[in-house]
Amino acid sequence: MAVGAALPEVEESTWYRTPALKVAGKGFARLRTESEGRLVLMCGLDEKAALLESGDPAFYTTPHYDGYGAILVDLGAVDLDQLTELVEESWRLKAPARLRKARDG
Image (cartoon, rainbow, N blue to C red; front, side, top):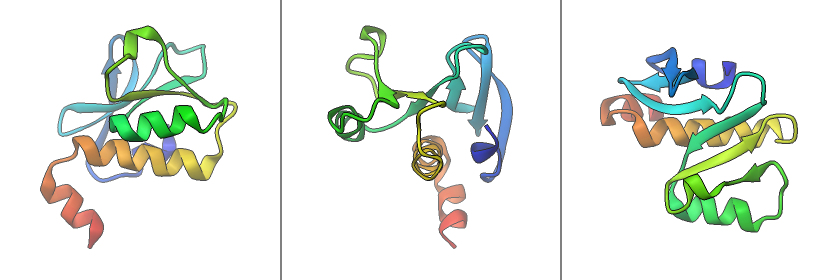
């Protein structure tokens, strides 16, 4: 989770009893289980639909996440550049406006 830990004011924590990253106390990335190699990232519903429709096997969902702005990511199959982008977008969804402004410079 080094990609997300480099973002402003990110803290390593737990969320649903698994390792997670939070900003301002809000979770934006977490491992589904420690041994599974699957990551849950927050995203908009449009982004989720686009990722699922892309056919890329790195992205999937389960019925538990239907209608919810979260995408499941297979860390063994995802492109690092795309993962970096998705983690930052997830961070942006949860970060306070002052942090987003500071990040944008």
